Length: 183
Image (cartoon, rainbow, N blue to C red; front, side):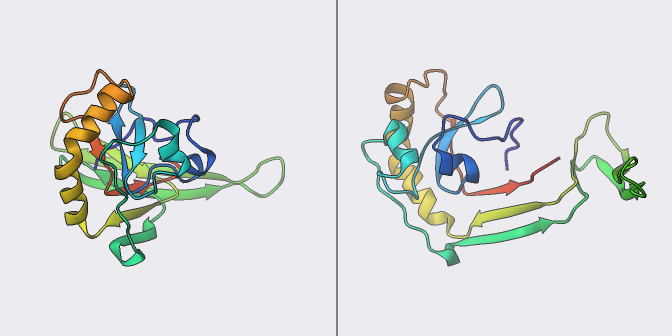
């Protein structure tokens, strides 16, 4: 996967798209700021508000998915889960609740993390409220679509949508995501 520094959807997206955020089938660019610039979605019809917003590439055709094509887990990662790079060899997450005996001192949730590392660099992501996932199971459909239409998608992004700072490997087709409400 590719972590986003700012995973919140663009406020200029249609409301339904802002509520759901990133979704399978989105085609876009990871910006220098660390956001995802959604250009269109190959799983939605051309008439969908997201695809109407900036249009779709000339070669656009909708890829229809059914429920068995996608694996979904609302609680894929439990609350307090710590995900780390391989250099983090030991980690211990402890959650605690303190206070809460009166309205003057409401309950506070604390999270304590201890770890050791074999490297001077590493990363740990803690999910205080857990996370959910969605993953495409039939990747061959998306691979075929990207191979057949990748050049058209790039031309659309560069010429039609004015994303002139992109490289040939800058477009992403979302095949799955991990979403958390806090981290």
